[in-house]
Amino acid sequence: MAKNDKKLGLGSVVSISVGLVIATSCLVSLGQGAGTIGVVFIGAMIFACLLNMTTVASLSELNALMPNTTGGLAQYTLASMGPFPTLISMVGGYLLCNILSSGVEASIFSYAMAETIPLPIPSIAYTFVMTVIVMIANLYGVDMFAKIQNLVAFLLVGSMVVMGAIGMLGLGTGHMVHQPLSMASDFKDVVSMAAVAFWLFIGAEYVIPVSKDVKNAKRNVPLGMMIGLGLICLVQSIMVLGFHNYTAWDELANSAAPHLLYGYNLLGTGGKVWMTFVAALAVVSTQNSTVNGLARISQGMAKMNMMPQIFAKKNKKNVPWFGVIFVSAFIFLFALLSNGSSDAISFLILVGSVFWMISYILAHIDVLILRKRLPKAPRSFKVPCGKLFPIIGIIGTVYMVLNISSDPTERNQIWLVTAVVFLILAIYSFFWIKYKMKMKVFKSVPLEKVMAMESDAYYLARKQRGLWR
Image (cartoon, rainbow, N blue to C red; front, top):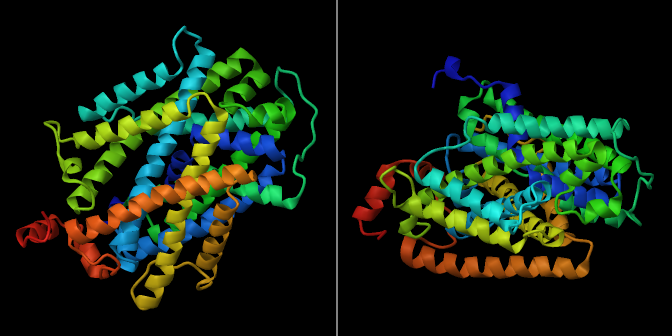
């Protein structure tokens, strides 16, 4: 692409970054964190935001080393550590985590719709109808909401800014509440809430695939993602200050849809309906993106022989039909598991956070390994201060995994679920790589070979030589 054809500037990168990160499940984490420790949750948010900035810096360096790769983290890890951690991180830290988070989003959607439109049907029916509509649309190759996703992101972020500012300034029509600024008994309570705050900032790295269309990508991609994270932190902080004035902390912490509770307390029924409408659009749009994106990622992994070949099969509309049905079914399953329960929603968000944290830790490790192995390879962007920020990112993220919840019982349950899932994935990955992919399980793949995997000819050659079946 010629330099003049690059259309996206710094502002576009920032808007894409913010739009991809903000979701209704973030509002649950925001309500949970603020409701548990009060306004000091803003401190936990700042810590989580800074930690995520180290991650986007590391991912920017990896993208600079291997530009225009569609697999992102999978290809970076394949080049640095080999297929075993790659397969585990992609299936567990990416596919499963995204399906889980979309299921939680769908559960919040069903709860919100039932609260706002009290029909005599189970709340999960709203999720079922939405899931079937999105699934059918994707099977027919219709990207339902591609053209309104930016509008939805703008409405959601704009609503948060406006409603947060109204609450912060005490301009709401509802009754103001008087409560302490801090509910934390000690500093450890704030640190443990950083793991909850982490969920508010994940996903900024999804900007990286569009980097080839960005003007001065070396500067604008990492800078845009960091500005985006900073803006999100500011918007969420304004919301927390609004919560303090209009919503009791204990009610906020126990709500399955804190944005509805706050909207009603702030502006009455009108505020509740407005937040329901915007959040509903956001959830449908997010689920559509997840079904479409993950089905195609699974198709690509099947093409690389990393997943069963049925994921690569297409229907008459050129759509990977099995992936669409598989992802939709599991989104509904996770929605069913968390239906209407703030505790279940919060638990699944924390489990999802751990999966995502592990993939971020791998990104930092990839940077350190590839710097040592390929010190002179050209990089248009490099994380400043040598190894300092990747190491800070690893230590900080590990610390958050170890302190994922202030409740020891819940923390142990999260670790257990994570360990069982990763053990199953490890067994599957070992045998799949060794006997199906016919590759060395723990041997890293040369960088140039990983780059060659972008070409269809690579897979054709592997199959013709009988290496892949």
